[in-house]
Every structure is written in structure tokens, then in C-alpha cells.
Image 1 (cartoon, each protein chain N blue to C red):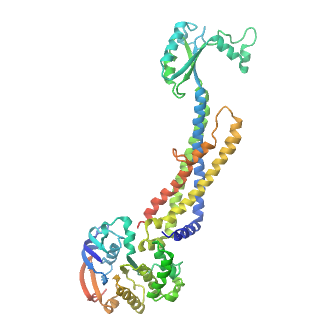
Image 2 (cartoon, one colour):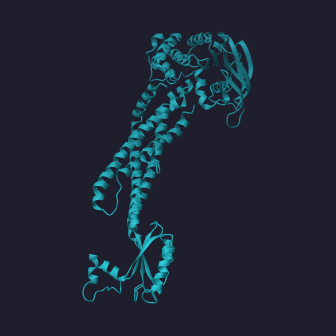
Image 3 (cartoon, each protein chain N blue to C red):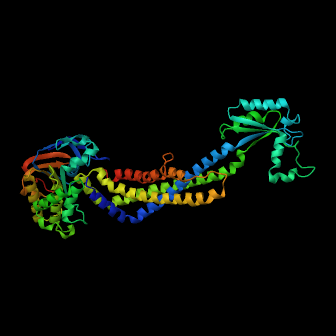
Length: 312
Length: 229
């Protein structure tokens, strides 16, 4: 196949439709950047959940004398030995529990006293909180941090159990924000990706109109469909390549300046995404990375429309 | 070379068929006029030969192949064996004469060396040897049609299909174009020409196939135009 014609046509096509191509490139750039951000946020959310989730435990608070929860479970006053054994039996029986540890009132009270902001409660000869007020606890480590409903419902109603503290609840707002950002960027990028699909379709339609005379002659003299379609496909690929390049640059800047130089130093208890996640957002397959998404978005409408307009 | 077997072509909507059980055989090297009133089915017949349309029923053979059942990807190969010429020339206005003719070879992937050899030869055949560098709008109508014929002939097709090639030309120029098509025909190329030009048909006696309301009403060797339009 003689490619000189194809490249000449590609050049003149890019020149002829310059403004449309710029529009396609910019839309692709913004939408792919947003899609990439969505992927990075997804990975950040997974990473955060995994790292923190492994450390998150469930606390089973046992009843104390005159338990402030006023629950019927605590009707008999402080938890008794048989009640504790009942709780332990339930914990052992649950598939969701990896391990659990008992912390007595004395141990818990001593540990709490070491936390500086709690100091006022323990100060003086007649402190607000005494050891008697501090509940004995079971610290439960879960097999899978996402699965806790079974063990909670198994233990919650037992006599001697004042309440259950799920540490995961404390992180709900953090996950909420990450989720909102993630879904926001997905919806935004979805709309923009749709816009770029339509823009590509329009560009191809215009280019086919501008070349309809050539295309007509090419069909008549027996040029193959591929040969006729090639300049269109290459035009789309060039637009996609520039859009992908710009998006890759923007995402790299986001990872470098927002994450590595910014948040990573400021918030240390969360593991942050890095360059390997960036590479995955570019060339990953599930979900498709920016490098796959960009060409797919331009080639699919081009192929469909060239079939329609230049059918041999 | 071209064979229509009981070919019927219906277009969507009511009305009589554009072609109605047409059976015609055109041999290799023949020159055939396709005549008839507007709407008699001439253009439909030509478009069927090029596989631009498919028949509603019947079979069409071109260059030994049954083209109505041909796979889509084989159609370009068929068209390389069939040159086409139109009333409105269909030249590319931004290309020179040489480039217009070369275009037909470039887009089917011929080498530059072959193009450089064959294009001047073909321009000589059509009598435009010295006008290769001109733009189409610098040429007369007759000359433009010669460029179009050169483009149709440059790949040395087995068949040339001409749809009213003299429709836009004065009688004297038309004779020149006919002479050229006759010359190409003598080189062994089958020529099928749809025309309204009774002067030419009567002057250059060839086989005449007359269509009326989609049916063949006359098929006559060395026939005349035969009806007033």
C-alpha cells in the first residue's frame, strides 16, 4: 500500500479541520484527566480502606455497675463471669472474627489515663471517671474489615454487653469525601467523554463531507475501504495521542504536586497513592486506563462513521 | 464479459420496477449503447454493473464473477477492472491533469514508478500529452472529459462504463470523445455507454440495447437510436 497519499491526506485533513481537532483534543484532555483522577481516587480509597481497615477493630463494651447505657442487657449490674464466657463463645463461633482480646477494667483505665486529652477526667482525688466506670472490653480483630454485621448482631444482644463500638464509623466521613470526589469525577468525565465522542463524530462527518468528491472517486476506481478510511483513522489517532499526552501530563502533575509534595507530607497516617498507581491509571486494563480510553473514544466513532459515509 | 440474468431492481416505495426481468449478454470487446427515455432504467443498469446497487432478483456477472453475491471486501477489486466515466467529469479541481489521472492509481496502491510510466502514456492515448500540468478549470469541457476517460482507462480495465459521457458537450466535441472511446474499444476494452445522443448513435453504428420502463424492448447489432425523445 502506498502510504504517501495517506499521509498527505492526513496532513491536509488536520489543517482543514484544525479548529475541530483542537476542540476534540481539549475535550479529550479534560475528560481523560477527570477519568484518570477518578481512577486515582478509587485507588486511594482502596488503599486507605485496606491500610486503615486492617487496624480497625470492634470493641465490645461490657456492663459496669450502674451502667450509663441503661440497657436491659446490663440489668444485672456489672458483667459476670458466665456472661463473659457467653460473649467469648459467641466471638469464637463467628466466622468474621480473626482474633479477640480481653481488656480488664484496670488495664483499660490505665491505658486511657495515658491519653493527654482525657487527663481532666482522671485528675484529682475524686476524678470524674473512676476505674469502676471504665468498662472491660473485648477488642475484636476482623477477618475482613468490611464484614462485621454478623458478629455485631451475635454479640449485641447478649447479657452483660453494654454496647459495641465500631471504629470503622469514625472513618465514615473520610470515605464519604473520597467517594464523593470519585463519583463526582466519574460523572464529570463520563459527560465529557460523551461530549468528545460526539465531537469526534461531528469532526469525521465534516471531514467526510469535505472529501466527498475524492471519496467518491476512490470508491469508483477500486480503493479499499481501509485505504479510504485510513486518513480519518489516523486523524482521530493523532487527536487521541495529543489528548492522552496532555492528560498524562496533568495527572503526573496532580500526583507530584498534590499527593507526593502535598498531602503525603501533611497527612501521614494514610498511605498515599504514588507513581505505580499513576502508571496503572494510564495503562491499566480494568478499568481501562487513559492510554486505552483515549484512542478507543476516538477510533470507535470514527470506525462506525467511516463505515457509514465511505461504504464501498 | 457482462451478463444480466432476469435482473429485477425495485426501489423502495410504490411504482414499477427500475429494471424488470432484464436479460442481456455483452461479450468481451463489444461496444454497446444503452438507450431509452429518462427513467427507463439505464443508470440503474450501470450502477448494478458496478455493484453500487444490488438487484432485487436475478443474477449479474461481470468479468466472470457473479457480483450480486460478491463479498463486500471483494468489490474494490471488481471496480479496478471497470473504468467509469460520467457526464459531469468528476475531476478533482485542486489537482492537475496528471495528478487527477495518477490519483486513480495511487489510491489502489500502485508504485510511483508504474504511475510515472503509465500516466503519460495514457494522456497520450487521450490526446492530452502536453496538458498534464494544467488544472481542470483551464481545460475545455471536451478536454476535461478526456481527462476523466484517461482516469478510467489508466488502470487498463476490462470494461469502461460511460454514463452520458457527451451529455455536457457540443456535437463536434462529442464526436471527438466518441472517437476516443472507439479507439479504447479497439484496444480490447468492452465499452458500455448510456446515452441520449441520437446523432452519435446513428453516426457510430454499434450494438444498441433499448430500455423502456425497465424492460429490454430492442437489442440490435449496429442499430440506430430509434426513437425520438
